[in-house]
Amino acid sequence: MASSTHVNYGAIDAKELNIEKDIISNQPSGYKATFRFSNNSGNRTYTLPAISADASVLMSESDLDASKLKIENLSPTSTIANLDELPFCDVDDSDAKKKITFQNFVNAVESNIHGSAAEANLRIADENGDFQNKALSADVSVDKDGACRIETANMTALTNLTLATGDMVVCGDVSDSGKSKKITVANLSTVVLGQRGAASEGGLQVSDGAGSYSEKVISGHASMDKDGVFSISDRPSATKSAEAGKFLHCNAARDIDNINELGCKNLTASDDVEATNATVSGEMRFGSNKWKMAQSGNHLQFLEYNGSSWVVKFQIQGSGQGS
Image (cartoon, rainbow, N blue to C red; front, top):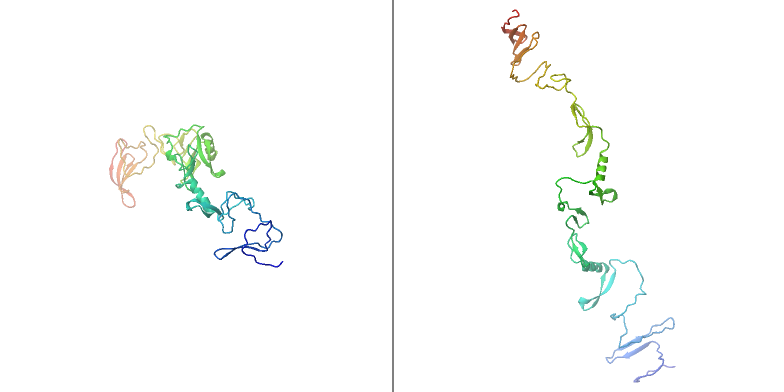
């Protein structure tokens, strides 16, 4: 059938309208509006749904305004990246349609939930079940890195250590990632004693100067037994005696015997100074061995040292035993 052009027709009633390509509307403005069908690979049907009021067909430039949005045909995923984008309607900007990255969306949600929080605050539910920002206080504190500390300054101070065997002590178990645990005083005492190791009878814990203690047994000039009895090992065998290599050991009267030679700067006697054995010559020297007073038999002599020998300068003659 040859093509022809028909103009000025009114309404056309027909069950089918066969159009090869375009439906054209000549606008009063002189422009045309064209409804064009693309070439299909087969027969296709375009169905317009029934409507209850006037409506417009959505185009690529149309705003989406719908009461329902079916998402069954979207590709499912179990992950979302921080830079992925989400659509939303901004009620503060006349319901403008906008998009936001997932990271900014999370930040906004957390800000709305948590509110303004100081450093190291925790979210703690109040009596109404609403979470509030609170800082740990009283016996425990926590910093922004999550490090928890027991605040001993807020605890009741003990004036002395009066712990019962069933009392608990808190400790950090380094063998279990530093977890806080409790141990009874009785078990703690057993552990401490076990760390000390087996002790010898009469042993003492002695510091090494670096903060560590080890067991030592008193030796040298003294010893101590398991009952704490302390003994000096180098004392003389008897009281009032002076023995070679031994400590001086006075009797109750503070007497000392057996001293062969006594060297001192000053000698003060509150009673007699005497030689009890008359057959033994005794002497006293003065002035760095320049002068000496000596017993010779029954006589008392004063002698001067001339550089090579002692010379008698004065002699007091004894009586009753011959001259």
